[in-house]
Each structure stands twice: as structure tokens, then as C-alpha cells.
Amino acid sequence: MVEQVEFPLQLAEEAHIEAARPLRLQSRIPLPKPLVVRGNISQSWREFRQIWNSYEILANLKLPVMKEHRIATFITCIGQDALRIYNALPFANDADKRDLDKVLEEMEKYCLGETNVLYERFRFNQKAQREGESFDQFLTDLKELAKTCQFGQMHDELPRDKIVVGVS
Image (tube, rainbow, N blue to C red):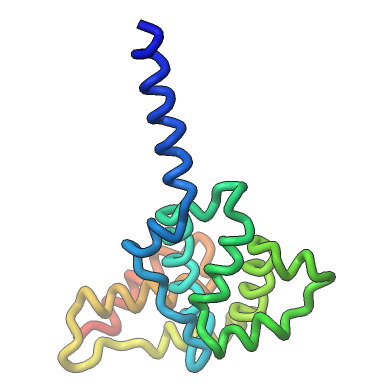
């Protein structure tokens, strides 16, 4: 009876150890595509960050024992252009440069910068449904544009009004 109790515990430990091996798991999960730093870098960063967060979970990179693998994997997948940005970020010390949470914070500051609300609202107000554009795509674009406009309590009403004015 002792063997029956130990066997499942041993399997659980082995499964945990196996889950902490990112190389084997990563061979089945493709790396996120490189961060695109040309064009709308803030939009590219938001999309990259969303994919990166999911990848970290799938590849078990958030485990404490994976700290070095986490930063190495991030650097491997961001691409050469984003690597140049990473190398130029103003880290307080070398330890911060190897701490992915601090790296992500600095990358976010760089990519998102200060939001020019007036410009973001201009972009939102210029949006109209293009010829051949589906309503669903138009609505998706409006919602994306509204995210950076800081509409506050009018966040739902203004896109609705824009649909009335901008839909073909």
C-alpha cells in the first residue's frame, strides 16, 4: 500500500520536472514572431506583448527556476531591430538587464511612450468604413482606435456614434 501512495507522488514530481524543461516543450510551441519596430510600434508592442504573455505560460517560463531561460527566450524571439532597442535601454545596472520584468517595463515605456490624446482622437474621428471593408472589421478598428483616446465614461457611446456617422 505504501508503494501505491509513493508512485503517484513520484509521477507528479517527474511531471513537474518535465514541465520545467522549456527546450522540449518549446520544440512544440513556435516562438512568437519578432517585434515589428517600424510603423505603428505601439500597436505592434501591444500585440507582441499579448502573444508573449501567452507564450510564457505555455512554455513554463514563469517558473522561478526559469529566470535565465525567460530572458534568453525573450531576446531570441524579439528580432534584431528590437534587440538594438533592448541594448540601448536605460537600465540602472546589469542585473536589471537580465530581469525580464524590468526589461518588459522599459520596452513598454519605449514602445508606447507618451500618448498624444489629441492625435489619437483625430485618428478615431477620421475613421470611416472603407469600400469593401466589412462592418465587423470597421467595428474592430474603431474599438482599437478608441482604446488610446481616453474617452472615460464615453468609451462605449462615442464608438457607437461613430458607427452611425462612419458606416457605409
